[in-house]
Every structure is written in C-alpha cells, then in structure tokens.
Image (cartoon, rainbow, N blue to C red; front, side, top):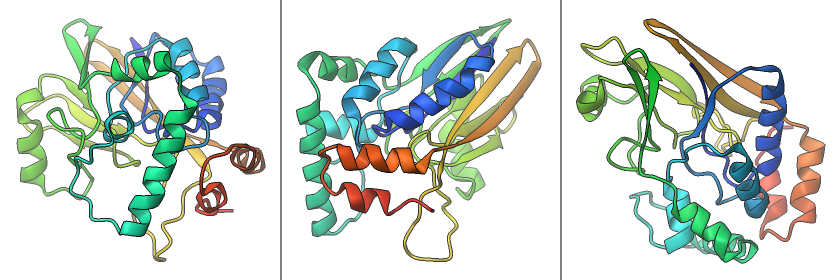
Length: 249
C-alpha cells in the first residue's frame, strides 16, 4: 500500500496544487493529512475545496482548531503585536469560508488510524497522539520522545506541527516515526539569522508498505515564487506583503 502523507498546508492552496501536480506521475492508494491545513495563508477557501477533492482523512491541527474557536491552547509566548496580527488574519480567514467549509474543518479528527494490510497500521496525528500542541523534534530528548510514543509503537507513526522532514526509530519496535514536513510553510529550524526565512518549496512524504517491506520517500517540490507572490498580492489577506517577505528569494 502506498500512502501520500501531507501536513501543514496553512491555507496555501498553490503549494498544495504543486504537490498534486507532482503526484500525477505517482501511483498511490490514499492521501492522509496531518493537520494545520487551512489557517494562515492567502487561500483558505481554495484549500478546503482541494481537500474535498482529495477525499482523504484529515487530522485536526492546533491552528485550525484555533481558527474555529479563537481559543489559544499552546504555551508559545508571542508579543501583543504579533497576537494582534494573527487575530486579524484569523478573522479574514473565517470571512473567506462558508458555513459548509467550516463544517468540513470541524470534521477533522484528533488522530487517524489506517490499516495498511498484512498486520501493519499507521497512526497519523498533528503534534503527538494525545495533543496537537506537543512538539516532537529530531532534538527532543530520547527518553522524552520514546515515553510520549510508547503506547503507540505497534503502529508506524506520523505527525506534523514542526514543519520539518525527519524520522526517528521507536524503541523496542520494528516501527518508526516520521514527519513529512510542510506543504505550505517549509522552513529550516537551524538558521544563523534571526529572520526565520521560509523555504521556496513544498514538502511531503510517500510511505510504501508491503508486509515487512517498508520504504519512505521525502519529496521537496520547488514553488514558483513569482506566481505565489501574485496570489498573495491579489488576495485581501492582511499583511500579505509581510508574509511573502518571509520567503527566501
């Protein structure tokens, strides 16, 4: 079975379309999405429409839960100025969505379990299996990482949230955890500057499972940055120029 794993589109339908175009030459069985699909980018409504067409299971991410509720659940400390900007973008995103679009987002699931056949299973989530706010990184201390995932090591595991592609082995298990990266907002956590520039590509993963034979492919697909800049400029999203300025040229 071949599963396409997407995460963290953040309302960037253009990046999602770029991934879907790349997939036209790839045979696969199913697409699963690890959350944070709608909120943040210039195309929330268009992203919902694409996800409906994909018709795969979708995990609820923290940013999309916040989009619907306005309730902050993570412990991230941000300035009042940044919080004000985020709230303005949230209000704009909601204004772009019809009630049936919002109902579609409300149907996102805390976790998604998939039967891969021949006794193999995949568990998809956003932050961790118990919280979309928890952070799993390559640098998460080993014991902390293993204890967080210990109850679920009979599954292959996949999460999102941190916008980076990586994999880690699960203790006392044949299985592993992987993050497919971010479709819409890829970035390098290890940057020498303080601007936090974003990468000009879309990231996703392909998981192929045939009994005990397992392969994982990470893909990065370049984005047409001129076209994406036009999309931002033509949208009415607040702070569109500021958002585009985050991307590496």
